[in-house]
Length: 91
Image (cartoon, rainbow, N blue to C red; front, side, top):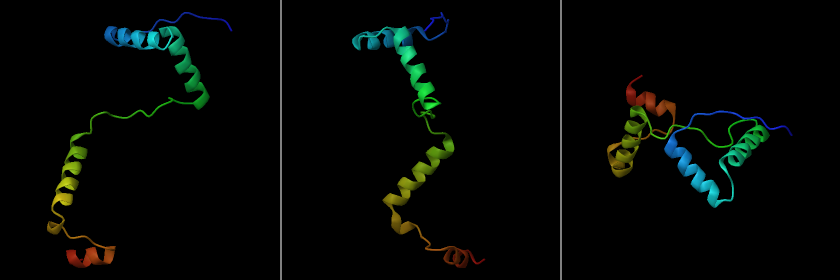
């Protein structure tokens, strides 16, 4: 298989850490990147979950609300069905 040279721009510290990691695994950076690309092709996508690391403000608020509900369940009313909820709301 023919080889081609490709230029990419990455953070210098990320590169240093990656080179150190891959060296411990007996790989160079080029080989590690080729492994990643082949895995992505095999899976037809990014071969790991991609998501935000930090929840947004709405999610953080919802998490806090659930924690509060778990700590003080007596302060909250649950409903088994939509009819019970509508009755409680007077709808």
